[in-house]
Image (cartoon, rainbow, N blue to C red; front, side, top):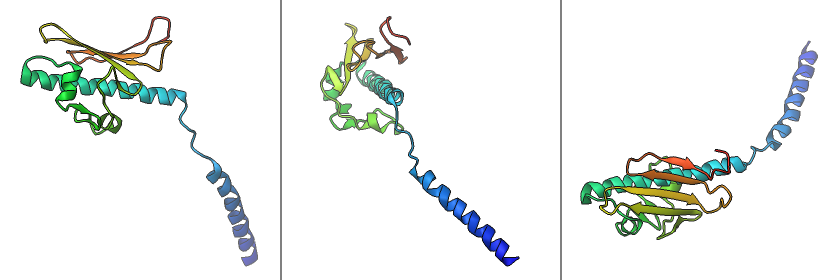
Length: 154
């Protein structure tokens, strides 16, 4: 009786050990192009949120909205990051912002103020997408939209 249970235990152990190397050899799939695109677009959307937050704060204290140069000079965006990003998006918080027009690598900003400074239009365009020209668009209302050229599917 004891030898039968020993044989069963050995066979069971051998089966488990045979299955283990196969399980360990499998790797998680690397992120595909769709995942990378989603990450890039999420970065742009959250940069637009950060700019909108900085604009609201600037208007609260100065009664007008600011251009990009002013936001940079104010310290809202620096070459070490921004305070206007949530902790959920460390890539936005710690991005290296520059004077533009490409404010972070791969993203070109157009920030246009109304003459009286009481309105703005923001466009953050993907410079690596010459065919569809993906962009994130917003304004003083804080609504963020995504766009592409009409020849590309949404």
